[in-house]
Length: 424
Image (tube, rainbow, N blue to C red; front, side, top):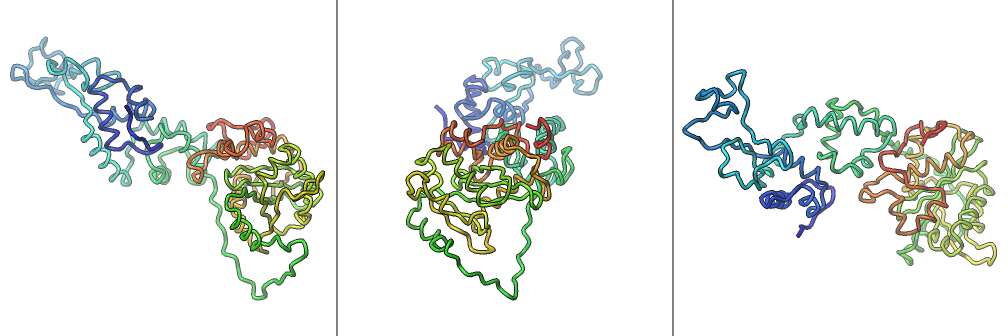
């Protein structure tokens, strides 16, 4: 019978006690791991890292621990002679690496290793307290981690959040420790290789506030109207809508973000016009069907760009004329009111920095970009990806028809190389 387990957390004293009991009963790492909902490698590393070495009791009043002590007849040659070789049971060279469950341990006169929960937990706690003062990893561990993490960061521009979410068993220390190791130069990548952190400049307050007359288009669709609507319909599905520019005058992206799951749809538009936006929205209605569009796109929040100034075409079903969605506009110069999609544009800029032209891009390449973004694990989703979170809202078939497929965690690429010929 297992114990309650919190995923992706370090082992607790209760879990270590469970490991000790399992070893005492002769269970293997797989059996113990299944009960703890942990990978067998996690259990193996824990036992090897925190096992306790115990010298054998004196035999004929000798403390000689050399494997050849009976042949050479020396009283005590411990580590003093070139021929010295410690007498360790061959069973300790492989799993389970300890003597806890061995039936011969009381008769054995060889060096022993045991796993004790209290000793392991005390050692772990001490290492945790002192880890910030140095590198609490072996050279072998650092080498293996560097081999795993560096390509994901330098070549594929994956975020630390994504890597931690998909490699909880390989990376056993905290993110704070990770950043500390990067500062110390432990790994092959440096801070400059980490995905950029967007810095928002403090907006300067204009002495002459721009006064904008509310147009007929925005009546009943202001941000205050939006707040009133969601107050009356707290469970409504909200989608944020925006555009992302390449070079001025060229192709642009239409982006739509489902707030609940953080799935971002990206469609390339020939021009930044109402007609192009209407065409893209119409295609989504055709893919999902009117009833599904009405459910998922119940509320659409966007900015005051002129390309969005035909809300009727979005809100109505062309065939019946019925309202199937509600479009609302943020306040002027208040893009923070749709901050989720603004933040999500950061992923686009990893691959396509500002000033990059979109003119040579096809929708197929944009779908590939969209798929990699939606396959990136997020802290806000408890380590899940937007793709996985959206499976609670749409079917896999519907998501794929919208242009997004699932990318394997270690294949996620958020570097400019994604847009090159053959980039995946």
